[in-house]
Image (cartoon, rainbow, N blue to C red; front, top):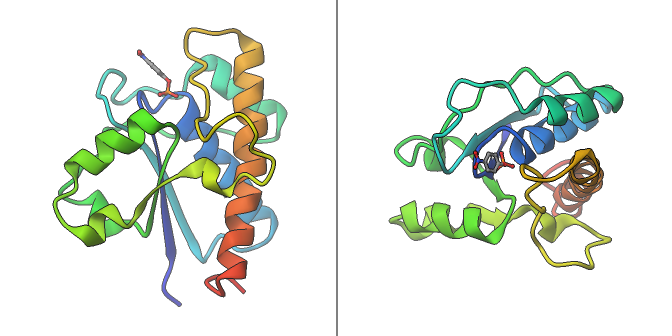
Length: 163
Ligand code: 4NP
Protein backbone atom coordinates (compact mmCIF):
# COMPACT_ATOMS: atom_id res chain seq x y z
CA UNK A 1 0.00 0.00 0.00
CA UNK A 2 1.19 3.49 -0.87
CA UNK A 3 2.03 5.48 2.24
CA UNK A 4 0.24 8.67 3.21
CA UNK A 5 2.98 11.26 3.59
CA UNK A 6 2.31 14.28 5.78
CA UNK A 7 4.55 17.30 6.37
CA UNK A 8 3.76 19.82 9.12
CA UNK A 9 5.16 23.31 8.52
CA UNK A 10 5.62 26.25 10.90
CA UNK A 11 8.19 29.04 11.09
CA UNK A 12 11.01 27.74 13.30
CA UNK A 13 10.18 23.99 13.40
CA UNK A 14 10.70 23.90 17.16
CA UNK A 15 7.19 24.59 18.52
CA UNK A 16 4.01 24.07 16.50
CA UNK A 17 5.03 21.73 13.67
CA UNK A 18 6.94 19.21 15.82
CA UNK A 19 3.97 19.30 18.24
CA UNK A 20 1.66 18.47 15.30
CA UNK A 21 4.00 15.79 14.02
CA UNK A 22 4.14 14.17 17.48
CA UNK A 23 0.37 14.35 18.04
CA UNK A 24 -0.49 12.76 14.68
CA UNK A 25 2.24 10.13 15.09
CA UNK A 26 0.84 9.15 18.50
CA UNK A 27 -2.68 8.82 17.10
CA UNK A 28 -1.55 6.62 14.21
CA UNK A 29 0.67 4.53 16.51
CA UNK A 30 -2.21 4.02 18.96
CA UNK A 31 -4.48 2.95 16.07
CA UNK A 32 -1.78 0.65 14.65
CA UNK A 33 -1.74 2.68 11.44
CA UNK A 34 1.91 3.67 11.66
CA UNK A 35 2.92 1.42 8.72
CA UNK A 36 0.58 3.52 6.50
CA UNK A 37 1.97 6.92 7.41
CA UNK A 38 5.15 8.86 7.02
CA UNK A 39 5.04 12.04 9.13
CA UNK A 40 7.64 14.79 9.23
CA UNK A 41 7.87 18.51 10.03
CA UNK A 42 9.92 21.51 8.96
CA UNK A 43 10.12 25.29 9.17
CA UNK A 44 9.95 28.04 6.60
CA UNK A 45 12.92 29.71 8.35
CA UNK A 46 16.30 28.20 9.15
CA UNK A 47 16.95 29.84 12.55
CA UNK A 48 16.96 26.58 14.52
CA UNK A 49 18.24 24.00 12.03
CA UNK A 50 19.41 20.85 13.84
CA UNK A 51 17.78 21.79 17.16
CA UNK A 52 15.42 19.62 19.18
CA UNK A 53 11.96 21.12 19.80
CA UNK A 54 11.75 23.96 22.33
CA UNK A 55 11.95 22.56 25.92
CA UNK A 56 8.42 23.87 26.60
CA UNK A 57 7.07 22.01 23.52
CA UNK A 58 8.79 18.83 24.69
CA UNK A 59 7.54 19.20 28.26
CA UNK A 60 3.91 19.59 27.23
CA UNK A 61 4.17 16.73 24.69
CA UNK A 62 5.81 14.50 27.30
CA UNK A 63 2.80 15.00 29.58
CA UNK A 64 0.63 13.73 26.72
CA UNK A 65 2.84 10.64 26.45
CA UNK A 66 4.77 11.89 23.41
CA UNK A 67 8.57 11.91 23.12
CA UNK A 68 9.70 14.51 20.56
CA UNK A 69 13.05 13.63 18.97
CA UNK A 70 12.77 15.54 15.68
CA UNK A 71 15.64 17.84 14.70
CA UNK A 72 14.60 21.09 13.04
CA UNK A 73 15.03 21.46 9.32
CA UNK A 74 13.96 23.96 6.71
CA UNK A 75 11.35 23.29 4.01
CA UNK A 76 13.11 22.11 0.85
CA UNK A 77 11.09 23.04 -2.26
CA UNK A 78 13.15 20.83 -4.55
CA UNK A 79 12.22 17.63 -2.65
CA UNK A 80 9.34 18.26 -0.21
CA UNK A 81 6.63 19.07 -2.78
CA UNK A 82 7.42 15.78 -4.48
CA UNK A 83 7.90 13.68 -1.34
CA UNK A 84 4.74 14.61 0.59
CA UNK A 85 1.00 14.29 -0.13
CA UNK A 86 -0.22 16.79 2.49
CA UNK A 87 1.76 19.89 3.40
CA UNK A 88 -0.01 21.30 6.47
CA UNK A 89 0.68 24.94 7.34
CA UNK A 90 0.28 26.02 10.96
CA UNK A 91 -0.57 29.65 10.16
CA UNK A 92 -1.36 31.85 7.20
CA UNK A 93 2.15 33.28 7.06
CA UNK A 94 3.64 29.76 6.76
CA UNK A 95 0.95 28.98 4.17
CA UNK A 96 1.90 31.99 2.04
CA UNK A 97 5.63 31.27 2.39
CA UNK A 98 5.22 27.71 1.10
CA UNK A 99 2.85 28.76 -1.69
CA UNK A 100 5.38 31.35 -2.84
CA UNK A 101 7.90 28.50 -3.29
CA UNK A 102 5.53 26.44 -5.46
CA UNK A 103 5.91 26.80 -9.21
CA UNK A 104 3.39 24.21 -10.41
CA UNK A 105 -0.35 23.85 -9.67
CA UNK A 106 0.12 20.26 -8.36
CA UNK A 107 2.53 21.66 -5.76
CA UNK A 108 0.10 24.36 -4.61
CA UNK A 109 -2.69 21.78 -4.33
CA UNK A 110 -0.76 19.89 -1.66
CA UNK A 111 -0.56 22.91 0.66
CA UNK A 112 -3.39 23.50 3.09
CA UNK A 113 -4.07 25.12 6.45
CA UNK A 114 -3.85 22.41 9.12
CA UNK A 115 -6.77 23.84 11.11
CA UNK A 116 -9.15 23.27 8.22
CA UNK A 117 -9.46 19.87 9.90
CA UNK A 118 -10.28 21.29 13.37
CA UNK A 119 -13.94 20.57 14.00
CA UNK A 120 -14.04 22.94 17.01
CA UNK A 121 -12.26 25.77 15.25
CA UNK A 122 -13.81 29.09 16.28
CA UNK A 123 -10.89 31.53 16.54
CA UNK A 124 -9.51 31.45 13.00
CA UNK A 125 -7.38 28.97 11.11
CA UNK A 126 -4.01 29.80 12.69
CA UNK A 127 -2.30 27.71 15.35
CA UNK A 128 -1.10 30.62 17.53
CA UNK A 129 2.68 30.98 17.73
CA UNK A 130 3.64 30.22 21.38
CA UNK A 131 7.35 31.05 21.11
CA UNK A 132 7.20 34.40 22.94
CA UNK A 133 4.41 33.20 25.23
CA UNK A 134 4.05 31.16 28.41
CA UNK A 135 3.59 27.44 29.11
CA UNK A 136 -0.18 28.04 28.79
CA UNK A 137 0.34 28.97 25.13
CA UNK A 138 2.21 25.71 24.59
CA UNK A 139 -0.61 23.80 26.30
CA UNK A 140 -3.08 25.44 23.93
CA UNK A 141 -0.95 24.39 20.94
CA UNK A 142 -0.89 20.80 22.23
CA UNK A 143 -4.68 20.83 22.63
CA UNK A 144 -5.21 22.25 19.12
CA UNK A 145 -2.81 19.87 17.37
CA UNK A 146 -4.28 16.82 19.13
CA UNK A 147 -7.86 17.73 18.25
CA UNK A 148 -6.97 18.77 14.68
CA UNK A 149 -4.93 15.62 14.04
CA UNK A 150 -8.04 13.60 14.95
CA UNK A 151 -9.99 15.75 12.50
CA UNK A 152 -7.36 15.14 9.82
CA UNK A 153 -7.66 11.34 10.27
CA UNK A 154 -11.47 11.67 10.08
CA UNK A 155 -11.08 13.66 6.85
CA UNK A 156 -8.89 10.91 5.35
CA UNK A 157 -11.51 8.32 6.36
CA UNK A 158 -14.37 10.41 4.92
CA UNK A 159 -12.53 10.58 1.59
CA UNK A 160 -11.86 6.82 1.61
CA UNK A 161 -8.10 7.52 1.66
CA UNK A 162 -7.88 5.76 5.03
CA UNK A 163 -10.10 2.78 5.81
P1 4NP B 1 7.37 27.73 15.62
O1 4NP B 1 7.68 28.88 16.69
O2 4NP B 1 7.30 28.40 14.27
O3 4NP B 1 6.05 27.18 16.05
O4 4NP B 1 8.51 26.72 15.73
C1 4NP B 1 8.74 29.76 16.56
C2 4NP B 1 10.02 29.33 16.87
C3 4NP B 1 11.07 30.21 16.79
C4 4NP B 1 10.86 31.53 16.39
C5 4NP B 1 9.57 31.95 16.09
C6 4NP B 1 8.52 31.06 16.16
N1 4NP B 1 11.95 32.43 16.33
O5 4NP B 1 11.71 33.62 16.04
O6 4NP B 1 13.09 32.04 16.58
